[in-house]
Amino acid sequence: MKGSYQLESFTKNKNAEVNRLKAQVDLFFKREFELYKKNGLKDGMNIIECGSGPGFLLMNILKEMPKCTATALEIDNFLVDILKSNSKLNNKQLFDVKHASIYDTKLPDNTFDFAISRLVIEHLQEPLKAIKELNRILKPGGKLVLVSNDFDYHLLTFPIIPELDEMYKAYCQSRFSENGNPLIGRQLPMLISKSGFSDVQIDIVCVHSSIEGDKAFLKAENVNISKSLVEEGSLKKESLDALAENWYKMLQDPDHIIYRQLFVISGEKNNEENVLIKQNQAAISETDKLTMNGLKNLDSLKQENLLNNYLINKIKVSMENDQLTFTSDMKLSDIDIDSLTATDISSLVKSDFNTELKISDILEIYSVDDISKIVIENISKNQIFNQEQTNIGDNKWTEGEL
Image (cartoon, rainbow, N blue to C red; front, top):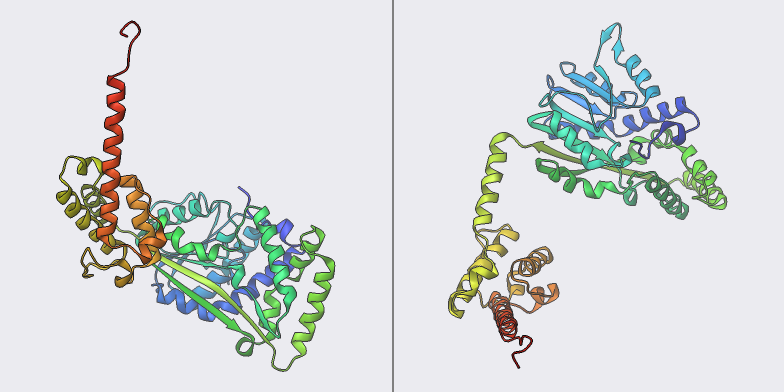
């Protein structure tokens, strides 16, 4: 299954691309490695990098943590050959090489303590499928770290180069057309959660030319990408020419800055105990469900009391605050209800009680009492309507009765 990083179409010079990939790893490694350690990477672990490319990241990690057992997974034939060469040093095997897809690694369940996928997920057509595969091969309690771009927060300069924005917009359009997603950084915490990971964390790793030096940045950039964008018609040649001229001018400024950042998102694979706890919580929440049918045969006072308690509990859960204290007659704006909770309540009364509420009214006007009364009034209207329909059905004339 193809994504938006195909070596043949991404560069005209494969060896130059390999050198760029090394420079890209080296540019971020010092700060990136600290985040790996923060997220639980320790010497002696069994680790895997999926989408390893030539293997430069693993090589750097193993210099710092030589007792780790490591596996590099890569699908591109050209890069696998380089990976195999880099996996040995002085006739010593540094790490194993696995030629396989991140969608189907062919590796056993519950194998690794720590998994890394760096600048890969943004190129995949089915990122969720890949992350679930990484979950499968991790041990319960194992850690996953995804490093990714989000091109709305990419390379920045001072003095500002307006054409950079134009070039990155064209780049994003090109990658989207190839089934990639260069804006996926912002989505990864949600995707990791959906894939069975808990304790999801997000960090940003930043590099700055005043600290790293210009050369480190220039080696890590692929100038051939912008040329390819012109050739495919995504970027105007005049824009590329202006970009090149303004880039040169920026470098001549004594106070110039080049700045870049990456998203680093991590999660822990749920162990069996955590899974059971979540399943029990889900079962409890199902039994705590209140519906229209459950309210229909009650008098109005009982309906209101039940609804008030139900909605108060749902608001506490949505706001993740069991200690929150408020009464049903208080305006929800007075307890600083947020837009997400208002959306939850709006969806709840729609799905459970077939009642439409505007999110803005929940945020600004309503109390729990107000919402309950609207729901009860709606239930009453539905009961009267259903009864009228039944009576109409019972009183239909049949042929010959008149």
